[in-house]
Length: 268
Image (cartoon, rainbow, N blue to C red; front, top):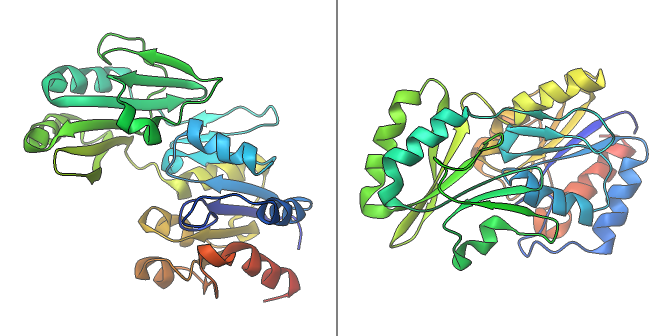
């Protein structure tokens, strides 16, 4: 098995529920990377995903923010599908009174409005991080992509309404909520993991049939529809299993990805 572009979703696919990275996983991926290109593809931002990439000791590119950014570690030029600064500044300005916090990352830069300790799980601050704090309608934004807004629950509809004027350019989705606040993300429209994979294949001069793709959730469905060896995880949602060509025998907590790669290696 060689010459493949192996694209692997991270949460719910490659990593176990504990998010622990052990030496067995590192060594297994190193084995498959010897004759193939391994690509991590995730909804996590560049800042967070690059840390996982580093821990796994991988060499290949990463696709972060569900396809908004494609980054290389061998000198190739990165591709970022950024939202226009004016859009983020306008939305922020119109909703400043209901925004508890806001965040996005680009490379090692973290842009944060009203840094909250309870959101450290989202920021994933590293020692090399460059933190730019302040209202997003005042600071100089750099390639905003997958921007997170933490909003007061009872007023979030106002936020969604103010975004409608840009509906041809952006997608707005609720990421999660608790009793008091909701986390809402803004992404560039028509940007997803599948789009980023196709961009990557053009850069690498590869075809869709040269891919092996693993995923488990809604954000993975379009890439699981591509014309390669596509694998939905045993723990994945029904919609992912319906579009993938294969379903792994084992889930993310039992080395589902690496065991299926060994199966491909031996011949499906």
